[in-house]
Length: 226
Image (cartoon, rainbow, N blue to C red):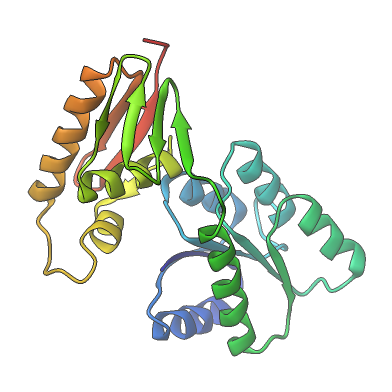
């Protein structure tokens, strides 16, 4: 699981990194609201743990902006603000859960697992981006110009790109999801499957483009209607 941790108290951030890393998570940590927005945009995270009292931009503002741009990554607010009004605001602005400080590390981990499980169970069998649709039940990629049944790896890659459209999916994230349990996969192998998907999108007259971010990952961009 890949997590974004947003916490300006560096001693607490370090402790949380250790706790979550020990659970097998890959943790990226930022210390202010501006960096949180940048990381969330570029990320491809399974969940975000967000403090409220942050420098440069407060957590409520960060939360609202993330949701406004169509990013529904599960977000857990972690805050010393324990008033009912603050909890209500957090949930109304789009947070999935709210945990007040001080907290038990085991409860934090349990809440993260619970909200990511809920996300995984969402009954959304159709993903769409631009003029292109991915059927998660049949692995069919289609547009009004035709369709393809994707291989398992092609499907998993396309699913990641469509879930995180307009945001970067890192090479490491592809390795975790598509080649889980396999030996270290070279980036050239990932590029080969990206090439397969690009050819299929072109054949479908899709208005989707898979953009490479050099040595880092790929993102799915929507252009004008084809």
